[in-house]
Each structure stands twice: as structure tokens, then as C-alpha cells.
Image 1 (spheres, rainbow, N blue to C red):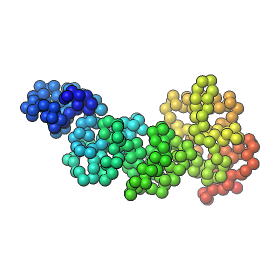
Image 2 (cartoon, rainbow, N blue to C red):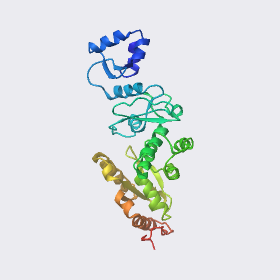
Image 3 (tube, rainbow, N blue to C red):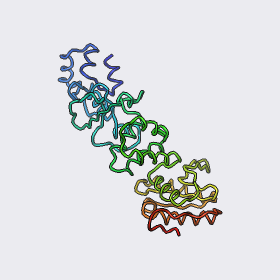
Image 4 (spheres, rainbow, N blue to C red):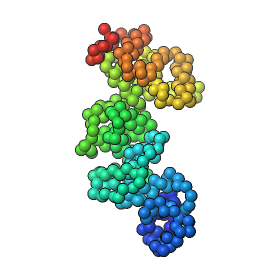
Length: 311
């Protein structure tokens, strides 16, 4: 029975669990003294010696934090695959009525919604996807970082804009509520990155360009690709490249996607973060010109920027 508990918990067991499985305090101390076990925190042990794998450490933190504890924020995002970066500190959330002792290297959050926030099946105990994403928007350095968590989660198909909106409704306090709600409406139409959100908001919508399809599926020669922005009626694709956020293999995939688009007789425009952030009006003018060449009979509208180049 002891082995089963340890196996479920990545090799970690608490003193209380060990005693319930039939060990005595003396037996526990004997395992530690003989280096068969390793004490990680007070009353929390690894049932093996040697370095601690990441899953073992995360289980140990949850068990040390006690009743109702769950991994959250950046640590829950790590487990979801929402980020490939490990936070230098482990984040854990506990019920608001509890105040655990400080744990070295751990940030402890307290929540009145802890019982509703915990994921029903994932282990170690951790917050639900939607709760994780909303928590991250609240600790983000700025609103653009908050938007990036929303877009990333939906773009990775971990959740939907509708589920995030529903989770928002259960939170009485939420920083940037109105802005996040607006961003979720944009994410719902297919904006899967901050750059795509910026293009939709500051280029397409602000200048009344035709509504494009987003994440449009393209299949050619047995390969499936997705266009960021596709003005299907006018045979024009806009690819948005964050550059610094794209490793070299991903840039190569982008190039192959653009080549396939040209072969399919569609015009391709490519813009980076600097273009869309600094000169959205010029981008709008250029896109509008191409769309008009391809048959659009409308005209771009001047936006609210005082230096807008649209006449």
C-alpha cells in the first residue's frame, strides 16, 4: 500500500500517509538515516535517494502546503504545456481560510474559490485551465502580457474564449475586466497571438477593412497549414511574424507555408510586430491597396490616430 501511494505521487509520501500505511515514526527515521528515503520538507519525504525530478518536487510542494493545496499560475501553465519556461519559484494556491507556513522557493496564493478552481482529474492537484489563464492575466506585467496568455491558451486549443468568459463571470474582482472581455471577443474570431490581436484591432477593424478569415486551413501536397489572416474573396493572405518569438525551424515552416500560398495563386503580405505596433495605418493602406487590386470596391477609413495616413 505504501508503494502504491508513493507511485501515485512521483515517489513522495508524507509522514501521516506513511503511518496510515503501517510505518512508525521510528521506521520513518530509520529510512531517512539509512539514506533509503530523503527528507524534502518537514514531514514530506522522497522514497528514494539522489536528485529530485521535477514531478517529485512539485508533488512535495503540494503535500507540504497541505489540505486543499494545488499548483497554480506559472507552475500550472508549465504542466499544461502553456509555457516551456519553468518559473524560478513554484506557485501554489490554498483555500483562503488557511495560512500555511512559508516554504522556501514557493509562492503561496490564497483563494476563496479554491474548491471550484481545482482541476477534477489532473495530478498533481492543479488549477483548471481557465482558472490558470485568468490567474496569469492578474499577475501579468501589463495588459499586452495578459492578452498573450488568453491568445496562447485558445490558440493551443486548451480552452475556448467562451469558457474563459464563463470563468470570468464567477470572479468578483478582476483587473482589466473590460479589456480582457474585449480581447476574448477578438480571440473568439481566431486571433491566436498578441500580434494577431493587434492586427485585427489596429489595422483591420480600425480602418474598416473587409473581415478576414482567421486560422484558415490550407492543405497542399499532404501538408496542413493555417493562414493567420485570409481575405479569401480577394485571394490575399496576411502572415504575421513575431520574429523574435519564432525559432528558426518555425521560420522555415512559415516560409514553406508562404511558398505554398504563392503556388495556390494567392498574394501574400507579411508583417512583423514592429510594423503592426508602430505603423498600423501604413499597413492598413498597403493591405487595402492589394485588396482593391483584387476586386474590393470599398475604401479604408481613417482611424482615430492623429497621424493616420489614410486620407
